[in-house]
Length: 483
Image (tube, rainbow, N blue to C red; front, top):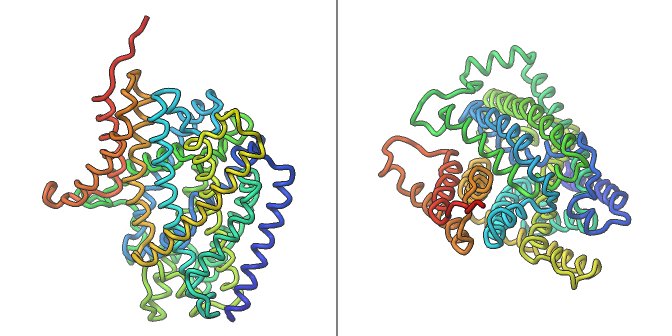
């Protein structure tokens, strides 16, 4: 299909997002931007969070990894299911009891101001790196299949996508995201189902027959029993548990949508619905990856990894499916990027700049600061995406999860220490402790073959990082004196 036609479809879809943003952001204020006025409907939040949790990386990288790893990724999702239960029944009650706008304010209440700022800083670092890595993957595909053929350079494509995102999140924030994420999740899942149905038709198989074929070829294996392997099921499930707790329950982007729901009970229903839905949706993505692998093998297509899905769609599938793929792809792109920029703006304004604590700032001044920070993060996203283009990893899902192991560990350690102990830290040491955990893990990752032999550290790096920070916090703390 003509790149010009595909680009026109992208613009029309963006126009629809702008219309939704205009409708939802009328009479919007800072409270609507940061926390949606606490009147979001829990079912809309849960459905929209599916798109945010999955992103374009899941849409492209998870199917592309099946030829190499089978269904091993599902072990992580099983662990995440149990992590969501911890979020629903441990973290959300805490956030609602304290009526938090930024979840990192809990660290200020429990540990101290520097602990609070250290937690917020690591969130900003984590979310910025993770979101730009996700965005890079989808921008790269749009560049390869659409805008590159129109003669537009990669930097211009990135700038154009970021401009689109800024335009529809600039005013409405969380209040707008609740609705746009719902629309985008619907389009992404519809594209997924149609691609699965069409590939089954092309392979001339029924769903059960195709699954049997995947099992015969060893592509549908879910559990790994090799203890030394980074895919060992116990490690993957445990890692998934803490990935959900850290990357959802201790992440401002994910939690600002949940705490925008009116009541705790409804917020818990939102997380429980998300946990069950994610199991089915990711399993369907893995199933799609198996179908793509079998189709590519029968067609003699050499593409693998992140390049497999788009290569099959644009080389072998009809124009209508190509249109649906592009719509689903940008629907997977925007929820992870728009929510990240909004959450980073919120955290930086509230946690680092402290605009809500500054009584000298009126509503207009706070809005001006928020707008400048919002544009500043968009510029930072542009620079980091260009950096990812220079590095160019073959599988972004692996890179993102590895980065999360280093950057979310301090958050896991800080929140766990605050919740599980009654000790009081020496607050001035906390930023150094939060930095020491990732640095020690970097050294362990670099020399793991010398230190551990054949044992491979995988996603459990997040747990090790959090445990190191927890232990170091214990060393710089003392028991609370009780009356």
